[in-house]
Image (cartoon, rainbow, N blue to C red; front, side, top):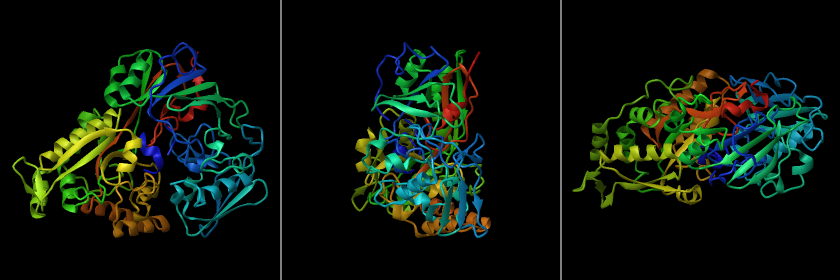
Length: 528
């Protein structure tokens, strides 16, 4: 749950808000006219297209490449590097040799200096990158000639190679600018399969194939990401032919089930929906209230009714079935338990059924982003469930511009979740020192045992030690919940059936241009 990607919920590179004009965003007469162009409806857009500020950090950016990438099975494969890194015997050095002949889209060659510049800028505290803690293990990064990069770590960090999917930017362009305010944020230059040709904020982003891409020129020549925040509007425009494809919630994706011209793609994900419980809120920050909320919620009903079975109950940030999930923490709805917790803590039911303690009603506000039907339904179901235990939750929709300054005081129906090593998703979600750092640790959770577990999990090379640490963490979240985890959702995409080579990966929270069937857009082939 790092950076503003939570808003699409969700990294990195889904594309927020606004509805594009009714004419085809790509400039044509509508979707479906050509197999070498595609118009995709997405729920959100990034604030910046610069990896220095977090764009594309989880891989699959179409504008940039990292030293490594992930294939369909999420296995690491070489990208800008010729091969996987050479790792020192002590686990403290990682050496990468760059691929020959790679150029940025402006024709300048990629060198090791560009890699060093990228990582050093992200690590610079003056750079507004709220994902900096993900690279905490790096002590030093240096170039060894033009084609070798050597990372030296402060401590052995088991999943470090996965961090080097971070996109690399050109020093000769970005190095002359302020990374926080420079034009590179909206006019990026990279080594990826596509280049940005136009960006109308709040409406659309248009990308053209990079004919000089080192991996071969893509067959899909033009890609337009139409920014349509409202789920219903996105589905309507897909149905009208104005879009070739779209991200849709389960209930809307189901309406295309019998459409022979379109195909639905499903992807399992680590993407959870959760209610943040801000510590400084006098009600949501009360531990007894938090425990009662956790017991009162009916997660199974949410997965079945809201997600139409396209998802699973969430008992913590890691999904059931993940190798690191702590078995035995699954828990059903238990209203009697919720009431007993509140009774013992002195929260007594009033005449209206709402509990109170020392003159304070057990009531708080829950915000969700406007236009997000799945979050709205989760929020309403949550409020209905906990009302039965005597807790009054007022559900309110708002834009993220309104939500962001309020989330330190009000609960938010948020999203998060990262694939790969548990450190990736858990550290920024829970570590106490990251409270209030953008969208990191939104609930301002502070639990010393969890901090200790996160540090141990990050710094130990021993799998048994790491596993024990993450078990401790998950059990602590049950005993001291700073969030009410609700569901893990499957991602659904509906797309015109005009291409081959489309697949999905196991996906993180962020989905949109980076994930979905278009994660490997450069490999698509038109149907003959």
